[in-house]
Length: 266
Image 1 (tube, rainbow, N blue to C red):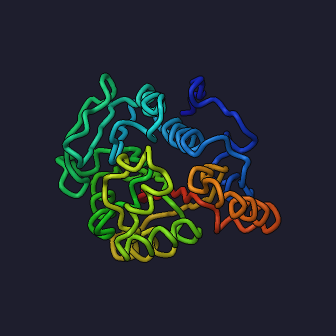
Image 2: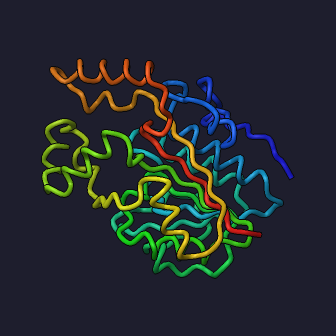
């Protein structure tokens, strides 16, 4: 059963915003998407639209919405409007759930959440995978809650991108919070949940899944110019050089955002 997607907040704005997983996998999408939230939500909506109503949907690490700026809740609401039942789990107890979005909500890690086995058709997470401390336990929990044929879709920083490599190194040196305050003073306090960077590449994810159970996996890489805030003042020429490199050397595996779809056998 296929339903049309018609939400203004997630309407395509750029050339590749409305591509499917299969189309994105064949396309070099640097600077051809308008926003990572928009393309991600559209992929989640496409996954929901494949399934017969009612569709149970789980937002893992739902927080206060997608991103930190105004309107971040509208992306989640666009998904909730298509869900038969909307579930949310969030480990940070200081976070208040978005009003009028979730039918079932709890403060918990996915690994400890009270969710019935094989109860979810589509699970998703937005910029959560980089915070997972134990990938094996996390994916075991994903596998447990998905129905046969259910899918988990996520977006996370690509472990092969220079930004993730540098961030991981700074984190290991325990200077990442200091550096963040230097580069982005006004937003430093928003980056409070600890990062782990343990499962940021397709090969690392596939290795974990091998020990859990059969699953089909799809991965795509996308990037716009969202890193401008990390290159202030004298660092701006470095950004220009990186942009030139991206436009000249078309290697999709090195783009900033990794989007994955993991499907449990039906």
